[in-house]
Image 1 (cartoon, one colour):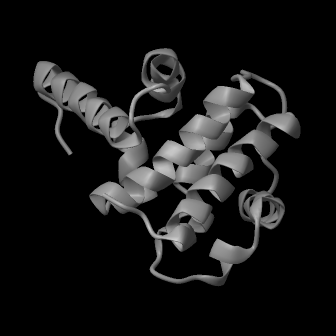
Image 2 (cartoon, one colour; image 1 turned 90 degrees about the vertical axis):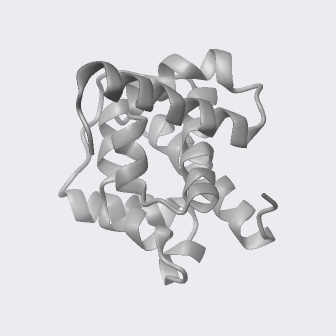
Length: 146
């Protein structure tokens, strides 16, 4: 799948947003969970929303307002994990046409952190397909569904 320039730019913005959260001292898994289930993420999922062109600093401010204050301190992921996770999540939305909320249900922050080492060198679509496969295997084992 070939993403348009604006879609690739949004993948990069979301990657930088996740890096900025780390730089600002937020608890990484809590930030990721909050973001992926937020109104801000839903706006980025939309076909067009003003927030898509606001930049990572403004999006982080919107998240702060929406959450009433994101949790500082706590678990810290590497800068590479944060950027990769943000980028992959946004690419996944375009590649599979799924919402951020649904994507997070399949691959939460812990999964992304655990898979980064083995997956970050893969083609983006291959990494997403593998993350989906892990989710499917887990749901088949537990009998859990959607």
